[in-house]
Length: 359
Ligand code: P6P
Image (tube, rainbow, N blue to C red; front, side):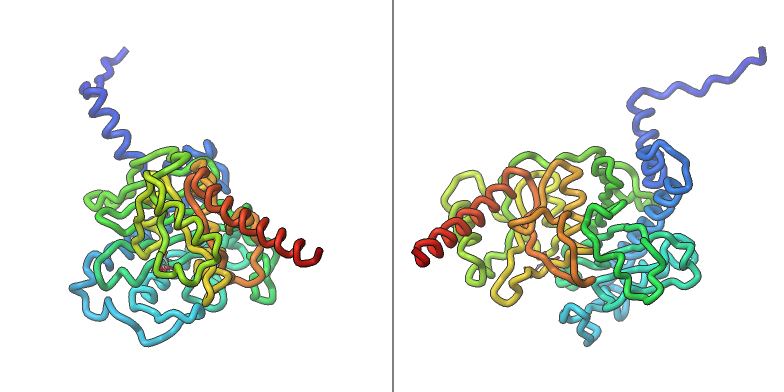
């Protein structure tokens, strides 16, 4: 038998490091599905395109302070009634560009676009829709603080011949993949295809997202509560009761970065709860269901956490419109349940008062 050259021996640590560096996002998706079926290949290709979008946006953000016309406002207002930043426009277009000619995505629905964007050459063969918030927390862009992008992938149902994408108005259990990109000191991509939550860190020297945390689990309880207390005067009494509770009990700490992705990322790893309740000005809440709350709720539940409107699991909510908003309470099971208990208590008191008034 010919003398087969044995590879030079590496230490187990060296072997593990090399294997990790070879665990790219596309490989991980296929490993997760344990399949090379057409659908598995589609998902792997979709995630690879999301990763490309993340790299392009990260590159722009890293140099934003040096590039003409990268920062500041466009002077326009989007469908949400929010002032549009130049980075919002750029990032929105990046997602469109990376999915054109992909043959995969027929429609893109974004916080920045009133109606879904159709890629005719991909329709109707393209079986997937990307829902995304291209830059979440864009108020942080001009001050070089962390921002994020949030995405969800759904399968198109029916032909959508009237171009109104009514099939997107379904609950969050219809998401086949969801995740976010955190543009922070490092760029991280966190995703789930329904088989746990996994985090990848961009290695700029490789231009690849490399697996950094697998099967992430949110602690049952954590010290962090993340909320904009400047809205205290606008909240329902039940939320004020919860805030008074955490103010008066040891073991809680407030963290609020003004960008949902960064605030959620902290809670995903350290536990706690993020709250964006309804307010006097926005009784339905500020955060958008289809491309902010539902994707993060998918991740939270996959990681053993919880996500609620305060009275209903986020993943059960069926939107009436593409840009519907919901209140959001998301994070550790015990901490979300504690917030819900204050809401339920107030509801009981109100029902008792109404019953007493009728008696
Ligand atoms: P507020 C950013 O505009 C965003 O949509 C989320 O990223 C963030 O959690 C929230 O709004 C911040 O809103 O009212 O506290 O400034």
